[in-house]
Structure formats: C-alpha cells, structure tokens
Amino acid sequence: MKTNILLLIAFFLIPGIIPTCSLAADTKPDTENQQLTQAYDNAFENYLAGNYQKAIDFWNQILRQDPTQVTAKNMIQEARLKLSGSATKQKGKFYALVARGKYREALLKIEEMSAIDTANPLFPKLADRLKKVTAIVDLKPSNSKPWDLAAQGIFNFVNEEENLPFSYDAFRYAAELDPAETRFAKLVAMLEEEAPSLKLNDTKPAGTGVLEHKKKLALDYIYDSKYYLAIRELESALKLEPKDITALKRLGSAYLQLKDYARAREAWEKALKLAPRDEQLKEYMSALKDIPDNKRPKNKTAKKRQKRPRKARTT
Image 1 (cartoon, rainbow, N blue to C red):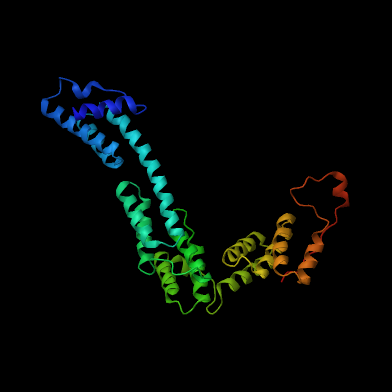
Image 2 (tube, rainbow, N blue to C red; image 1 turned 45 degrees about the vertical axis):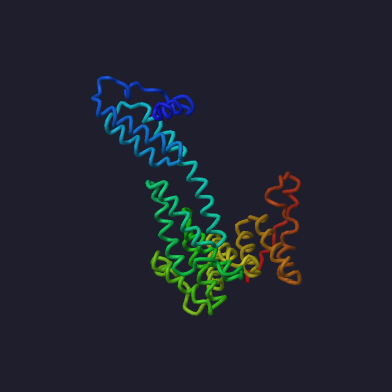
C-alpha cells in the first residue's frame, strides 16, 4: 500500500512523470519484480524526503536491472533539477559564511553539500582549501584593515571563480600592515604551497612593498606606452588601497593616453576629493575641462570647438 501511494504521488503530482507498466508486467520473475518494487519504494521515499542523490542512486539501480523503466529515467532528470536548485541555495549560504569570516562554519556547510551532491567535483576542492585556511584561522578575529584584506584574500581563494594573484597580494599586504600578526605570513606560505607559480612568477624585489611595486610597475608601463598593462596593475593596487592618490593619478594618466577621457576624469576626481589642495590634480582636471564625457553625444559644431588636452605630466 505504501509503495502504491508513493507511485501515485509521483505519477500525478510531479510534472513530466508518466506511468510505465514495466513494474507490474507479468513477464518479469517475481523476485525481480519485488526488487524493482523495493527500489522504487526507496527511491520515492528519498525523493520526497529531499535526499535527491540517494533517490538517483536507487533509480540508476532500477535502470541497471531494467533499462526500459521510463519512470526511473524521468525521475532521475527531475531529481537532478531539484538537486541543482538545492545546491545553488546551499552554495549561497556557504559563500555568505566565507564572506563573513566564519570559516569553521563554512567548512561544515561545504562538507554537508559534498555529502548531498557527491558527484560535484567543486565541493571537495573548496572543502580542501577551506581546511587549509581553518588550520590557520577558523574565525576572522577582527574588522581591522589588515584582517579585512586577508578576508578578501581568503574569499578569492575559496571560490569557484578564484583570483589567486589577488589573494597573494592581499595576504602579503596584510602582513606588511601588521607584521606582528604571524597568521598572515602563514596564509602567504599556504598559498605559495597551493600555487607555487605565484612565487616563481613574482617580480617584486625583496624589501619592496606590494603596493609600491605595483605603482612603480605601472609607471614603467606608462613610459613604455603599455597603457592597458599599467591600468591592470593600478586597478589591482586600488583593490588593496582604494584611496591611494598616486595610483589614482597614474590611472587617470593611463586612460588619458588611451583617449578615454571619461575614465581619466573619474580617476582624477576621486583623487581630488581625497587631496583637494593638490595643484597637479587641478592642472590635470583643467586639461580636461573642455572635453565632454565619452558618453555624451558629440555634434559637428562641438567637435570643431573641442580643444586638444595638454599632456598631463605623470608622477
């Protein structure tokens, strides 16, 4: 009776499921029919309980015994859709825990997700990385600037859309800001072991700060007319220090050389708000005063009156 109720629920309440007469066919031996019936019973029980992976396993067992079972094929598709939706919700909760610096709780969540969706290769990878993090720090200890940076680095490390170069910069810069906190150095060493190419490809001289190296590298790129590379370095520096005036100045200069006047103005305006008495910035802004934003439509008359900007001296 129990099995019949579960089958009726599946047949009439779950969209896309059609009955199949194979289960009740007299052509099957009694023992095999009993095995299929029990497998269906277990599958539907797990499905209704939300144990979608276990339900899929039982339906696959049915298909191995009888590949003609249409209901089992349809239910596997349905369970995979449910599993995908459940995984998406759980993944959101996982990333929220990581973002809040609750690394031990996040590890429990990702291990729970791995148990639910055993076929997902991402979850074991994230769990392994988070285990390495929790061996160093299991809870973000404060909202200080160094720990905020380290937390951003951890989030980019324990993420399917990883950004390991940023994590490397964030851990090293946090260590510069608070040399007494030994856990930052341990995070750096952990990442170097996880991704040795970061250290091998690093061009920062010993004794030079991460931020200063990026700004110097960007300036060299500007002098070599490699403006896009300069912008990449400066934007990376500004992720670490959004209020760095020198980085904002050089970013504006790089965009100016690319004739992207709107972004040049945006960078220099940010810098001018931070340093309203900076005469050099005022000179830069003066060079742009007659140039409209790129987003504004330009008519022929305005184009004739448009003055060429004076080349800003790069610092």
